[in-house]
Length: 189
Length: 225
Image (cartoon, rainbow over all chains, first blue to last red; front, side, top):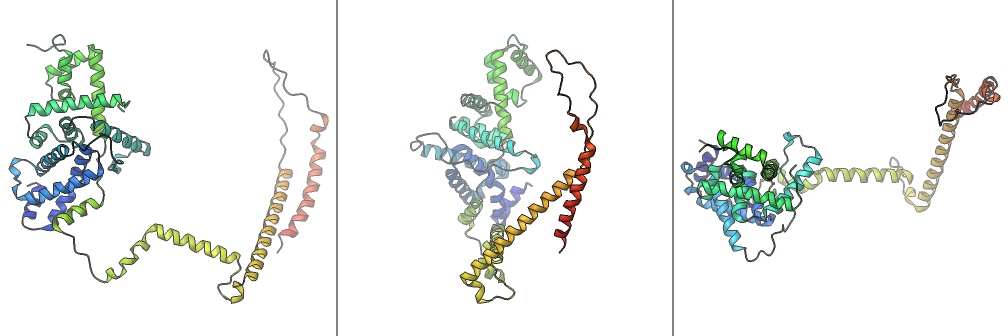
């Protein structure tokens, strides 16, 4: 049995430390998805909290047969993000980032030099700007595939769309993102 | 129908680009894709651009959530956690003091205070009220300043003597005979020939030793306590 499934079962029995473990295991992924989609740290924080509140309330409805816990959470997060996008569409005057980039994960094992880390930070900011110019459908497909590392099947489950649609969105999203980055003067490194 | 470069077009390259990058094309499709790409400048540029972007996206590290977020989620779901009580709770107010920044700051203040009090002539072994009067402080500062000046000028003077001794004792190297050579076109004949007194080293060395002996006589009493 997967560790997440075991933790869910313990949570359902009222084990609060299991819930804490579950929150710690998935906060970064959910926050990353929310931030990459909204380009706002504050909105990402609020949405992440909202996702976990919803997960806490509906944990009993999770069924491991229908997919992994991470995919289930991604699906839930994606639904909230789309709701949030539709709700705030009228309020959104510009698609620029409203605050500074959050920190990026440091991986000591990667052995990156400080200048490489700085370059990655700059690239991350530019990618974030470019993602904001994509339509929500293409944006979520690229984020899930290339930034969250989900495979096609998991994306299909999370988005609840046919495989052909997933492939088409990922392909169009990548081509569009490359075009926007080229317009911004960003070259592949 | 067999897929070849001839029946694979640019629209197909664009449609199947992600399949190609993610390794989802079969051998026949891959061959036709690559064959078309190699012969089409526009498609080659597109493949290179999108492939570079995908590689960049995969290289990006994850964004890090703010540290308070996990606690905010836990507070919002299972309520605030119990604060650990016990004898440690009594020393909770000391937590900021344990920070390294505070320790560095305190150490700096302590050292500065020590230096200043030494300069002001405060004797901490035998503290007296008289040490803290402005007149005594000014006198002590004046005394320390004069002492420091005297020591530094003595040190500079000693250094100068040592330097002079070293200069005079340094063996002077004889100039090596220059190999005869013919100057290249457009070059001069080299430096002018030396004057006779430049080559007479014997007299100079004897003068140098005499002066060194005098300087040693000056230096030795200075080093005695």
